[in-house]
Amino acid sequence: MQRQRVRVFAPATVSNVGPGFDVLGFALHRPGDWVEAEASDRPGVELLEVTGDGGALPVDARRNAAGVAARRLWRQARGGRPAGLRMRLQKGTPLASGLGSSGASAAAGAMAANQLLECPLPLETLVACAMDGERAACGSAHADNVAPSLAGGIVLIRSYRPLELVQLPVPDGLFVAVVHPHCRVSTGEARARLAGRAFPLPDIVANAGNLAALVAALYRGDLELLGRAIEDRLVEPVRAAMIPAYDAVRRAARDEGALACAVSGSGPSMFAVADAHDAAAAAASAMRRAFRAGASLASDAWVGPISRRGAAPVD
Ligand code: HSE
Image (cartoon, rainbow, N blue to C red; front, side, top):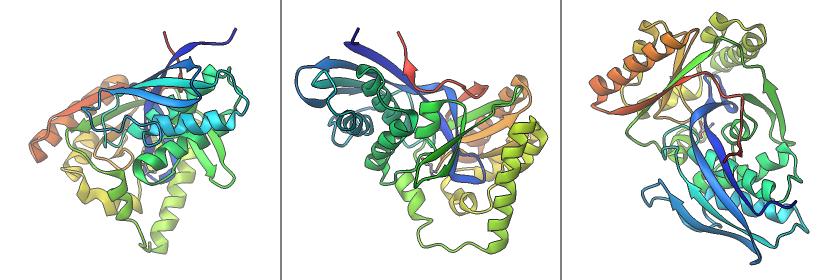
């Protein structure tokens, strides 16, 4: 029977993951965004309400990441019934946090529309629709947030044209600490810092080595190698000055035994990886103290394994 209503949760994500600028990301269990959508006789996609954003986001399906993604999906699934959908977006992911906030909204919008149409479209199409939402929100259609938010787990974007996604294994025993300091970094501005920049060949070589080693580490379940591989010599050094207390936070995580610590997406959130839940929790506490001591910033933290579950209907 045709679904008349659906509520979808789409997880926040950590993208770049060190050396994988725009090509690597993984899903968190929390936070995330919810989209509730219902069938409507009125043609097209309407966004009725956005909550949890403090009024910062447009309540207009043509400009909001969730609405843009749902609209494209609705158009693409031609001949779909019902005629339209009405949706409500509930933000749980902090804005401009580096946790894929617009990506989670876009993923939830695309998934909700697909569910109402009885899932006619495959994952790659949902990702392409959500990339449109990402572009509407921050000016760039990168997929390293929307792909893991939709697919769950760790996703590599092998190619953008054509879009080719590679799901990577999530090793057992890998725990992540994510700390979000209460300040904002605009992804658009963070990307503008990279425009027209030339990178030295030795740094490109180092990143190629790290990204390849990171993939090998995931397949081998070699967490020590994974820790060594989460190091970006290209983008993160350019953006580090945008992250308050960047050096102190990294040091704090490493001093607590984290295997690696890096910027999540375009920041200001940072993430650390560890081989035990307790170690990840200790790293999160140390990172929070460092944000407080080094930049007078309060923060939130999430600790746990990578989520293997992507955007999906919830009760
Ligand atoms: N790969 C993107 C960037 C993620 O670093 O700009 C931001 O959402």
